[in-house]
Structure formats: structure tokens, C-alpha cells
Amino acid sequence: MNIKNIITVVIFVVLLILLAVYPKSLKPTEQTELAGQNEWKKYQDSNIGIEFEYPNNLIPNYEKTVYFSECEECPGLINIRADDVGQETLEQALQYNSEKSDLVEKIKIDGTEAFVYIPIDDGKRVENSKIIYTLRAGRLYKISIRSLNEGEDERLLKSIRFPND
Amino acid sequence: MLFQRRKSVLVASIVLCLAFVTAATASVMTGWHGLSQTQRNRLILARANRDLGRDMNMQCKEWVRLVVKDASQNEVAIPSTRANNYEWNNHRYVTSYPRACPPPGAVPGNIIQMVWTNQSNGVVTPHTAIILSSNSSGMTWIDCNWQRDEVVRTHYVSYSQFEVCVGYLYTIYKIR
Image 1 (cartoon, rainbow over the protein chains, first blue to last red):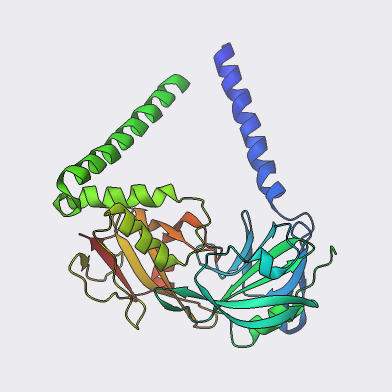
Image 2: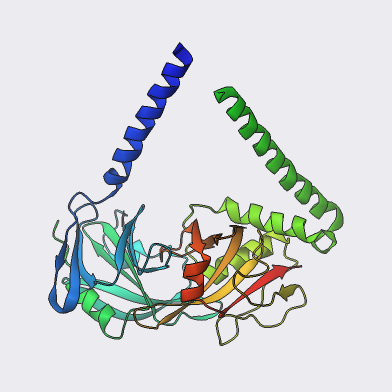
């Protein structure tokens, strides 16, 4: 085996190790799923500082954000992301939001004010779809929910906690 | 061997770039409607790829409309969707394909409008995507908001999954 082949094998092994380690580093450090009431599961994510319950027929997928879908090839039904925006109020944090949507409701999530929007696509409101924003400790949370059974989105929102505060 | 691989990747990249440059140059010279369908589809894909990974703050159909508008240099604005959510209203520069499985017309640069049905609760989600590629078992799409975060991504959907969740509630369009 000449030196070129040895270098190629070493690079290949290093790449394999990186591939094995990297996806795990993307996942939340503290993510557990526990059996909840009525077959819902609890999702805990210390990276973005949130926990909530979700229907147990959905599976969590991890990329830059976490989203839940019915299957690997299915569209996301719940998406949670958090961005440090350094603003003091939710109005300030959303002032440059160019998204086409209608503000329909103001609610409380874990005691904090949250704005509920219905997105607009193709000139009309998207059915069964909500985008909820809330600001917690300078961090803007965007929670997108789509096509859950009636009452399930309400249950999910009520179950949200921010344990890192 | 590594050098040969790099060389072939380089050659492939150059060929792809040349194809886009040729389509773009032809577009300037002849105008959108003077292009071949392959050239128009390439321009749509090239414009769509520019947004890959970007948070567009848009829903799926609005993003596809923007892509087509930009690619065609404001020549084509795709029409609004009918109440059934899987067909668009008629438009002189939009042509649909007959429905079958696998879908005819699933070629790169064509656009698919569909209704995706959740298997657990029967709730439907309309969706619009651009076909990036297809093979004997499925399609790869480039679209916005698939994960509900308004980001442009590519992803694969097998024909078997498509048949279960979409069935015949879809239409594939080419933009002329």
C-alpha cells in the first residue's frame, strides 16, 4: 500500500467518524419523550429552552430547527424555532417581520404574551394554520402549527413551558 | 483517482454553468416566450436554487410565484389556485399534464400543485413545489415552507408515499 492509498484510507475513516458524531451534535442535549396523558408525548429541548406536549403519531425531525411530521417524507406539522433578537417587547421584535399574515389573537403562553397569526398564501388565509410568536428573555420563539385535530393546537400551546428562565 | 474525480466534478459544474448561462443569454436575446421549454425550466430552477437554504418569510405558493416572475423577467405571474387546492385557474402561459402515477410531466423545472392529506386525521394541506429531479421511484422537490419554517429546501418524496398522501389530488404544470 503506497502513501497515497494510506492517506485516502485515513481521510475516509475520519469522515466516517465525523458522520457518526455530527448528527448527534445537532440534536438537543436534553431531549426526552415520555408517555403523557391521552397518548401525547412530552418534548424537552434545552438548546432552545422549551418543553411541550405533542400528539404521539408525530415524529420529531432535527435540522436547524425541530419540526414534527407524520413520516420522514411528510410535510412538517409543528415547527419550533428560537432566535436571539435582543429586543425588549414582542412588538419591537416583530416590527420588521415582512411575512404576509393576519394577527387574529393575543394569548398567554406560560404567562408571557404571545401573538397568534394566520398566514396568507396566494391571497387568502391558509386553512388549519397558525404562527405564534412570543418573546422570552430576549429570545423570539416562532411556533408554526398546521393541520392538527380540533383542540390539539390549543392543548399544545397550553403545555408549553420555558424551563431555562 | 482523487484528481480524476475532482476533474469530473469540475467539468460537470462548468457544463451546468454553461447551460444556465446559455439559457440566460438566450432569454435576453429572444425573450422568455422565444425560449425552448427546456431553457425556460432551467431558468426557473436556477432562480429557485438561488434561494436554497434561505428563510423567505413566505408560504409555498407565494415563493413559487416569485421564482417564476423573476425567472421569466415579469412575463409570467402564475394564476391563483382553485378552491379544490390542487388546480390553478386557467392561464395562457400555463399548461397542465394528465394525472397518473408515477406522474407524467415530473421533469425538472415543472411545478406541482397538490393537496397532501394527513393519514392520521384526514386534514389536508395544500402545497406547491418545483420539481428538481425524478427517477423511477420518486421525485425531489425544491420548495418553501415544507418544514413549516418558511425556508427553501430540497427533499425527496417517493411515489409510494405520494400515492398514499396525495393520490390524484395534484396537477403538474409547465410554464410557457
